[in-house]
Image (tube, rainbow, N blue to C red; front, side):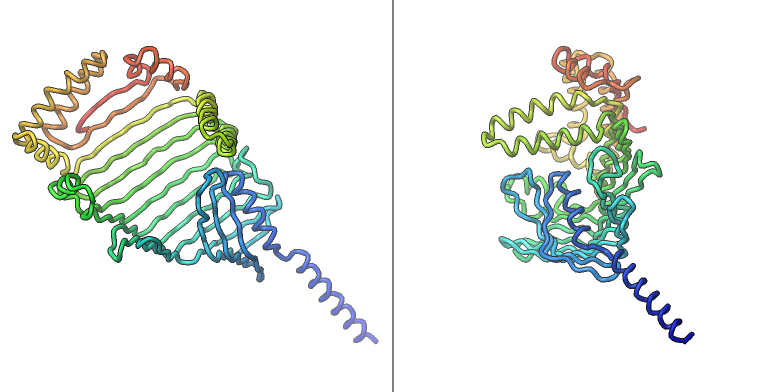
Length: 398
């Protein structure tokens, strides 16, 4: 009798456990629907043929992406996508520890594109999509691709060794920081169709491009402050170009308004009227922005001397003679802007750089943030005051 009761208890417990596991089983279709809804808030449509779920793994077959605001944009086929280590979040959303994609192998009109090892780690899918806060947006912790190659008519013309991207969100979801690196970029410029351009490329030794691209930045959603601390293109035997930018007012609300305006313009059957309305709306929305600072810096890696020699030869002079002519032209060109202080800075920086090409930088650092309407007003009414409004300076070899 006791054995019978124990058996009953065991069977009842087992049944309860099975029912509980079924009640909490992952709903792969629900996850894909919420992923689709989140993408839709960015003006992108995601479709799929079918979804299967096994334990904590969700596999979507026949996944395609399409930018809804582009009238004739083709679907981007992603094939089968596997979401691993999936968990349901408290807000009804989902978290996937890893998302892996099929290798890309596409051919069209003699072009052949391949991409390997595409994956995302730490993907968060919101339960209720919203551009009003970071909690309602699609976010990931890191993304990675392996080798990407493009061939034309059987000849390799472009390649990237790998792409890596990382995103870190603050504990209170008020801001995020991110960085991206595109490493091992290679491009073949030996078959440029324009004869003159090809001749210039050959003489400057630019038939092969080798380099890397890197970006670093942060965004605070409440104030809309964006700090792009690095956007660099580092090309071997050419030089490194780096841009920085800081502005405020790029809030989630502004992003949503811009997206809505773009969608409305695309839906307008009168394309000219839609574009005109979009332009006016964007002009109004951009007035919410403020400019904090920016810079453009170039560090030379031998391209300057080659350019001076090349264009000097075009003018029947040496590279040094051509550099001297440029130093003489700089003050004359700057004088037309009627900004004496900046004219002197530019002339001094150009002379210093051309005498010994190391680096040159243009920086805008206003004493306080400058509202976009003030910049627009100065540009239209008194353009010669812009350098002073924005705190522009030019320096070389620093």
